Length: 252
Image (cartoon, rainbow, N blue to C red):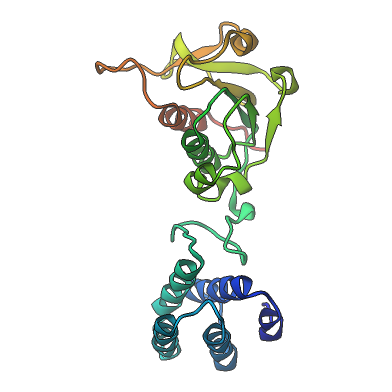
């Protein structure tokens, strides 16, 4: 548990983040004594980032928490995020830094090679799905900016969790490969590898010939039943990752 003295020595934004994280942990079951809890309140009230309105909210919420309403700890946490202009899903497992807790991840030898995926939104959405389904590593080839605010925001922290590499050649990526592309084996019939790399193509033209050559005839296709000839690349990736996750993984 970080001490009140340590929190007090930090910069204002970090102080607010630490106080919010502490109250989130309190909501999750961590037990603090009254002096420590009141100390967190005093740090927040002395912060230049906390307005008079925020201060009044914190006084009431901390009083409610100390009287036994554990839910108020989560209210305080979200108020701190609001002050910082940040957000987090209440179902996420986060660490003391309010970042996704990597120790909660199950990781499998499944990798993605993004081939000219340009949209930061799509990149962020793919990272978010990949985190949920235990993807080991993501390689980006001629893609949009993975560190852009839009990609980071859409990924909801997943960019910080999944190891990823910006590559100059697909030859840098380990196989075996298969591609998500039209004209392949229907996804319900495809034999997914236990250990492998799936190539995800661009929004406009699909997998490039250069990357498609890596997969050879190993292509998986999602059947469509509407008038549209394709679905969003991040949605398609989510469907693929779910199906891949159904492949039995041998127990060690």
